[in-house]
Length: 374
Image 1: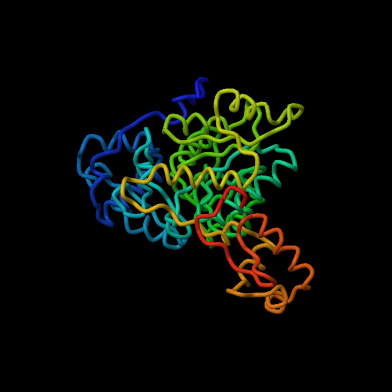
Image 2: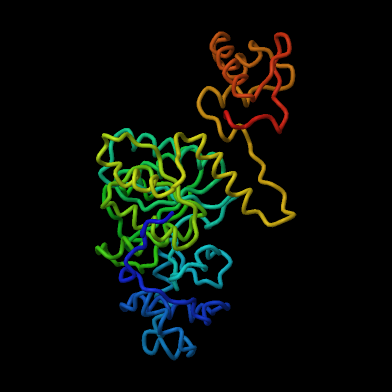
């Protein structure tokens, strides 16, 4: 892509990973860093301070005496704080231009069977785009990827909700973990902690500020192997995330949008500039698997694709009920669906290349058949 999508460096700055955070730290040092963070030392200043290589206890001064209370407060929030030397701290995030010195987490471990995929877009999106974002989030999570977005209204929320239908999602916040913004997403945030995680570089008690959200966008891009933009105007914050993604060497995809849709002007600009086109959720999942396969180290086996994980609704029910030599009646008995309805779904699965009929019996197709029509 050629257009200058580069975000304003004033939103985050650029700093290297402090050497002291590349090695294990003690609980006392961890709590002291949290104390500095809560005292108002933001990510940029904290990183710059740690670059001097002075012992953390000396840097923290009197704030370091509060380390037990800081860790205890996080425990009461059922949260934890990560530094780059921790195994759970995402490796991809260590490679960006401004890695967060501290990453506050509430929820499940930040790992999954496949990499993270960012799904972002406009807050004031069209209903059709929101529906598509939810289907896309569901399909991507069902395939084993973790969906990353920003808990904002519109596309972000729809992508999170879709991911929760079939898998895991991470919401990156522009506030502390104990501040829900927007407030109407409190229930959604709680659901995410049970099937994924809330993450932020801001300590507890920090509310929303305008510059927090562009800074948050770099973390969305940094966590993600690829970024999918569903709908965005030319002034959308989602295009800031695109800039970070391109700076970080991530793949960017843009979803199709009609020429009459003013909310899609940013999408059209991305496509004109060379972003790869997404036309539906199945194609998106295929592209993501191709990307993962292409990035495998030499000698590493390819990622196994589970066809059932890519199906939903009646197709998935019928597919998972088939054993070798099943008839339509057999499947109907197992899932308590009318035989005629089962037969129609089986015919659709056969067209998809997932099952084959042998007389009046059905078998699952062997691996290696054409997967482009899933």
